[in-house]
Amino acid sequence: MTGADVLLLALGAVAVGAGALVVATRHLVRAGLWLVVCLGALAGDYLVLGAELVAWVQVLIYVGAVVVLLLFAVMLTRAPIGPSDDLDRPGWPAALIGAGSGLGLAVLLVDAFRWARVDMPATGTAERLGEQVFRSWVLPFEVLSVLLLAALVGAIVLSRPDIGRPGATPAAGPARPGAPAGPVEPARPVVAAGDEGGRA
Image (cartoon, rainbow, N blue to C red; front, side, top):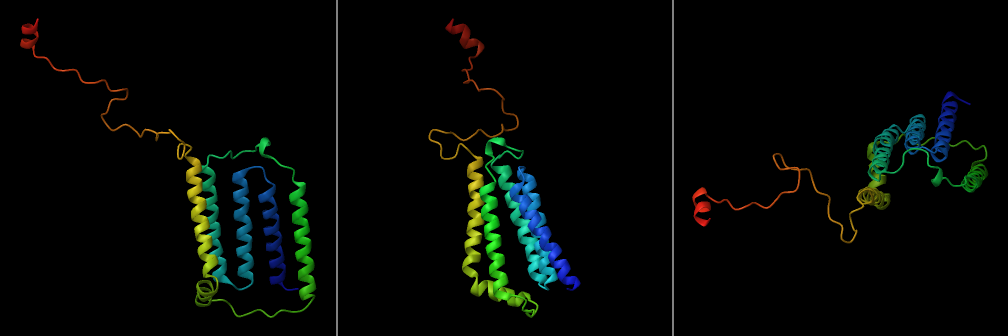
């Protein structure tokens, strides 16, 4: 076992542990920060495997964009960021499903490769990656873009309870400079002094 193998296993353990903390923590913002650690560890795995471009794309897009989008969605929806006892659910069904899925994938992987040695492919370049993304994977790429846009629009709609409600009026904006703060009374007619005396 080489040093690269040890580093790969260590980063994989960090990614798995951070991913477990994402779903186990009761604090929403901390879950987002643990997601940053998990995605950063995956980027480190890509670096060890020689895929530098994929690693930096992982950092720029997932760590720098998706996590920020999730945190903005939390702030826009005004969700409680602290522990919420009323939102807790039993964790054993999720743990059982996760353990079963992980065990099944491990058995499938061991049965497929055993102890065979797999040669590393050539290091990926921007040209090869762009060719694969925009030829073979262009439809999932566009679907993911639409999904992220729909999530952002949905967060904005959920943050405005007056949108779509019958009879709701939009909130009044800030007063203009120099405008009176209270309700404006109708203007009274101006009467000249001479007219007032004549009418009397």
